[in-house]
Image 1: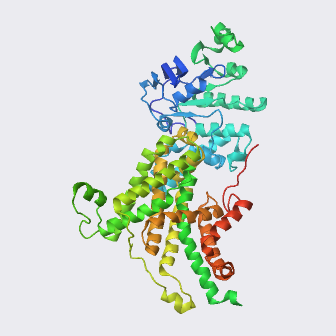
Image 2 (image 1 turned 120 degrees about the horizontal axis):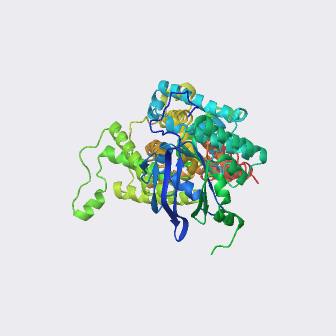
Image 3 (image 1 turned 90 degrees about the vertical axis):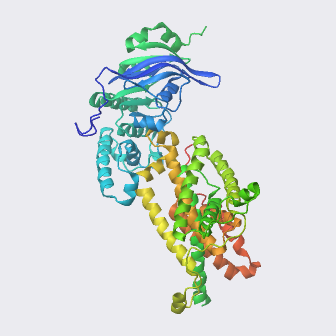
Length: 273
Length: 322
């Protein structure tokens, strides 16, 4: 991704635009007797913005949690970069190049904006921490490099003025932006956004949409996002997958999905058989 | 003026040095609380366990000897002459790091994302387990700990100022300063330190940026174990290694209430205030109140703080959004 000088980092595994980056196959997830997800399959292609939509309780966030490893599905497989993924822990999956934001903002409230975004670089920091405690030379040089990347992200998200502010004190909209910044700092191959615009006013939504599109177009980052605002979803996304009661009821480009009768029924609240 | 004679300063200095001993215990609490949001009830027992293990290695005691003798009908107590103090300290450090790993693997890793109170309950359980383990491994008798720290009053200070100051307490003060400096550098200026602070704030978010909770917790509990060892050595050298050592954790509570649960400098200054406060109070006001005020002064002071400044002197302010 382009927060780093071009050519400096070139991910060997990165595929061509249009290749399948992540494939979910027949994934089922249940909590005790409650089925959250039932036999869902879909794929996310390199370079696209993929929206996951559906009414409340449809299993969208559960799906995201499966992808980033908070939940392990009882059935089904996940293929990432052409390889079947083992049951990894969330921090291992982060190291594999999947970053995310949360519906209810999960920032490190005691830290400044800058430090929060710096934590996003942790997966990129190679120097051993014990080295750092003993002799700070190389580690310091590395810290400066990461700091430069982070400053570029701060510029990109237009949050220079809150660089040193502790994030607990920021308004909601800005917190969402810092959280996006932290996810971007990991230079992820796949960026998962869980309702990036929830609770925002129109202006904030427009800003956030612009950032999402820029991230996707300028840096080619693949994005999967959950969103409730239909207008936003239709404008932003290349393809949409629709969930309802843990099942997939639609999948395709926005226009096609919009005309799908099952989707219309789900959103208008037609009684289930 | 009686307040500024040598005797007054002697009281102040001995109070400060006693305070350092409290701070050493409080430090262990602050470390774990800062890094994992857990109030670690087992910190005092951890100090006891560390001291027991150190004495055990030093004197060449066979761990679990009572148990082995009871089961096999043998009579083994010691293997050889014991180990050199330095080697014993290194071995004890390794034991504390291994213990930290066990605590994380067997208990804490099962409790990710749980409420603080549940983790707190787990540490109460841990305190009992460790106390029992210490008993079975090393026996319940009072042991003397001699790691070569200087004891007795310092002649230099007596000659220069006429004050009577324990060498051991001066050593404790120096060790505490070294400990705090290195801990501060570790938590503020290293990548690991940033990861520690991240984990303390939000488990899920920390995982999502690629931080392994188990690794971080292992580091934190290892560091707390090392601090416990230092506290255990100091207290053990002062009053012998016995099971009442685990109760020094109680003395750390008022220190924490004064200093704030999240502040390393707070733990130090809180300890100093309580050390000096209780000595001065005992000497100058104690006789009017029937004496023995040292037993309750610290708690009363903590109570006053809880009423007027619940976050302590240096704690993070509690801001609740409504």
